[in-house]
Amino acid sequence: MSLKNDRYTYRVTWSEDDNEYVGLCAEFPSLSWLAKTPEGALKGIRKVVADIVKDMQNTGEIVPNPIAGKHYSGKFMVRIPPEVHRKLAIQAAEFGVSLNRLASSKLSQ
Image (cartoon, rainbow, N blue to C red; front, side):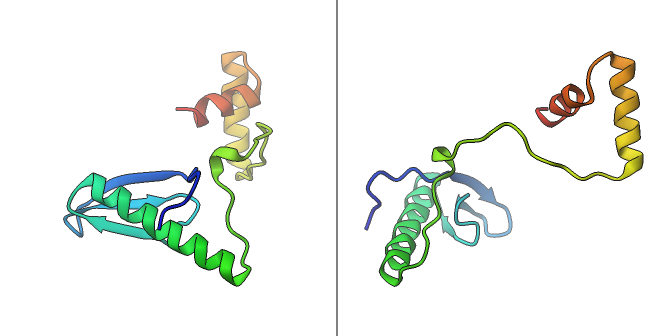
């Protein structure tokens, strides 16, 4: 089984513990597929996701939307310890930039 218009986010990486490639899907973090080749890992995880989506649809469960189709505002809240907040505020002042610009720069590295 394969998904029509599969827009999920996949990644293939090497698993030193398993001595194989592992296929992963960001929208289904509990799923994985091991294979001897990267191509096999991707093919395997895509099939597992397709099977799970079909099963979820059959049982009336809510199927996760692909990350690629989501819209982001560019804003999110992060809680940090007060001493880290102070340190970042000082750094921002020393660089002559806003705290927001400094945080954005550090997060994008």
